[in-house]
Image 1 (cartoon, one colour):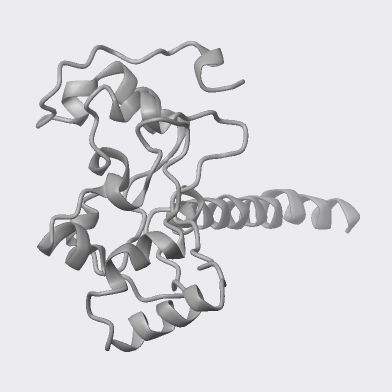
Image 2 (cartoon, rainbow, N blue to C red):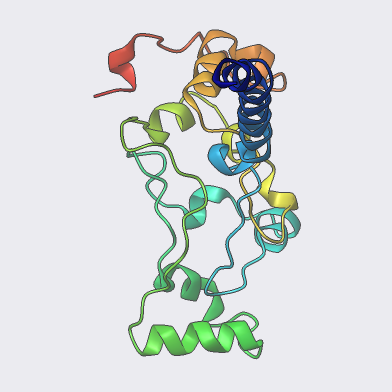
Length: 190
């Protein structure tokens, strides 16, 4: 009787358990992929801000608000005083601008929630890319068409290497002549 139970376990239960484990892993892998890649991430921000209005309709250059992108590693998140550069005179009667003005007067920084994030183990320099003529949209998507910004591209090592290896395939409307990017580990992992 013990041998028949062992045969039953080995022939029926173990394969069923293995099948369930494999199927669960596959389903979990594909269902959680957008979350792991960050694709679709669009957190609620402390101030409702439409990139569609500012960067799209009004055609304000990304670099106006995200200062430092041409000079340094980071595309800084706009501080309250940058917003107030325009909104001390423009659309002052709108509820969000009133909140913004109050934060400015109370010297309270806007706690924007970061949307696009690379792993801490990866080094990325915005200025190198911007100064070579690579536009923001190639990594961040067409934010000028987004009321609420969300991550639309994977920011993974594979995605970066794909662009470094085939820049004109991945950026077909790229106006600048860009050579292939570095592929050695130390260029991104420092």
